[in-house]
Image (cartoon, rainbow, N blue to C red; front, side, top):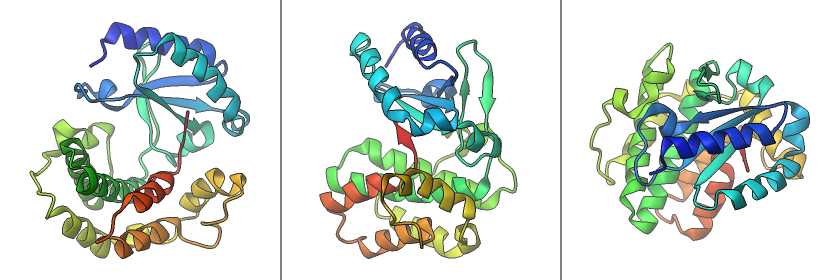
Length: 247
């Protein structure tokens, strides 16, 4: 588990390197729930120019990784336009210690939690690591909470406030399927989600989601592969389950 002084030093380095952006420390290190296996998650709130020129940022980040070889961290790029509207959910603290959070879009949080619940379930079923089962439970609990709550606060989604049931690996597929079936209204076509997926994939020459409801397409693929979650399917799911650019 990384020490906070080390994380603060890394945070300062990233903020200094990515001029014109705002770097937020998020995830379990922001919420105080980090453990020995936790990654350090940063959000980079950025302009469209920075977002579409992410390869330059990725090259710069390689140099930073050389200075911090022991740091297991990821930087998720979030366009300011998306952040202000809650299209990509992000919450964390600035280098100065101020909390910033996007709006909470219930439909998008539910969809992503459902997909990530399945993704981590398949990882657990394939590799047997308990951390994947715990992550699947967490995402299932988030999906359950968002399906019932009219409004959400960032603290609502923290593990300590979710009262995550001790669902077994055998229970999770049925639970996720049940929530998908019962809350179809939260999965109806969303122009916002269509834009998010195609902002990432169509501009890279991948038209998979151009004529589709992205979440329905992914969940249909999941339902077809429930009994055959092999390495190729897991690789496919990893590529498409969460439409963000990580450097």
